[in-house]
Amino acid sequence: DSFFQNVVQGPEDPILGVTVAYNKDPSPNKLNLGVGAYRTEEGKPLVLNVVRHAEQLIVNDQSRIKEYLPITGLADFNKLSAKLIFGADSPAIQENRIVTVQCLSGTGSLRVGAEFLARHHHRRTIYIPQPTWGNHPKIFTIAGLSVKYYRYYDPATRGLDFRGLLEDLSSAPSGAIVLLHACAHNPTGVDPTNDQWEQIRQLIRSKTLLPFFDSAYQGFASGSLDADAQPVRMFVADGGECFAAQSYAKNMGLYGERVGALSIVCKNADVAGKVESQLKLVVRPMYSNPPIHGAKIVATILKDRDMYNEWTVELKAMADRIISMRKQLFDALQSRGTPGDWSHIIKQIGMFTFTGLNTEQVAFMTKEYHIYMTSDGRISMAGLSSRTVPHLADAIHAAVT
Ligand code: PMP
Image (cartoon, rainbow, N blue to C red):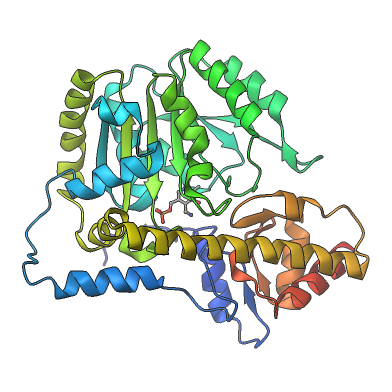
């Protein structure tokens, strides 16, 4: 008899489960638009040339050792990551009021931030957008925060429900944490304009809410690292406090290396020092210290001007291919005369299109066309290619007519 006789079968992850179903499908025409991982025109995963180059340098470094990193990770990596998101000339960096800790990609950074907040913040409520990345509510709940939603997406316009967002944040209690997608909102691809960001910033500061940025797509939205970090920088420039979770999964293609960072921007250097000491107490019993390899790759690229430039070119090429897929899919639907307004496909930003297709239509496309995506109608544009666009357009056309 097993001790675990009464353990019930858990549900498949709603996003990663799409790939499980895809792998079981024998059809040669099958198409996986579920998981948010970049693919080339040929449908292959991509290792950036600059990453291969950095790995060569790392492997050839005779002085390389495999001792533990400090609890907070690789110091160089942390400094460079802060510069990347907050800007090389950020006064907050010069004032030593930002603490940065290397974490296990974006997810780990969010989790460490959440654990810290659950222990040290007086208001243990976090507002997250409706909808949001499916892992957000789980990460924050399990850390001990209470999760509430603010309105974000308006299905009627397939755009931002800006009025709803402002209303919901206005009625949040003072001190409440607000999760914001820094750019390329997942799953909707809908971002506030710069003007709207400024209004959100003013509201958050006037209501003394605490902003927590999730930055999983810096550079991926527009192709520019600086443009995509603009919202975060606006909040740091006003001197207030905020959190930022960074991931290098998408923008450096380092998915499985699990490399990311949590930064906490504090009021002053004294607070920052104490906050860092408490972050160490969060990390030590969780996983002691983070892995070396991915952080070395990132630090090698970020600190060398040529490699940095090479990275920005490769990053822009990925962003541009995704933008071109949007255009091609939109054109394909136009030329089929597919009923409805599909302009949101070219208006939305980042890796995903929130198609507006419902659960039944998604199920139909999977059954009849072997196209796999999450049931909310989100498709990963990065999984498309010129070759597969017609197949997807046929499927969407059939699903809505
Ligand atoms: N936040 C958002 C919004 C995401 O889409 C993702 C990746 N799907 C992450 C965080 C974290 O991903 P990772 O842990 O792989 O860096």
